Image (cartoon, rainbow, N blue to C red):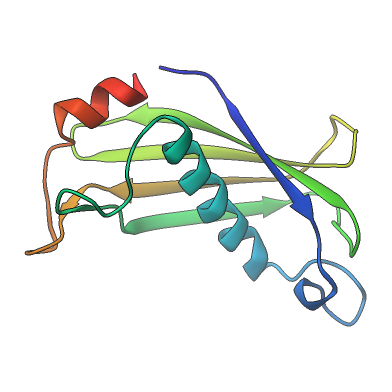
Length: 130
């Protein structure tokens, strides 16, 4: 499968709690944003051709705080390309450090948007991801 992709941005004030630490819910938003950019970079058009990618599972482990003003770097990789789904892994780093502040996993299922039923990942898309 094609290599890892890195997505980055600054942590905004509204994404933090009263202690100035990133609220946990933002990690899921960032995973989704990184996934979307990862797919676009490979030429996978989101929600075109009648295909969608709902998430059916997501988890995150928090190791060190990420704070307002930090530059987050989210690396995303395909851990497993299944018949009807993709399992991604994510690593969250801050600024120029290689230290991992959080990790995550997410499973997205390929569905027919008309029926919302799981379908096999079309061969054209699979080729872009392998």
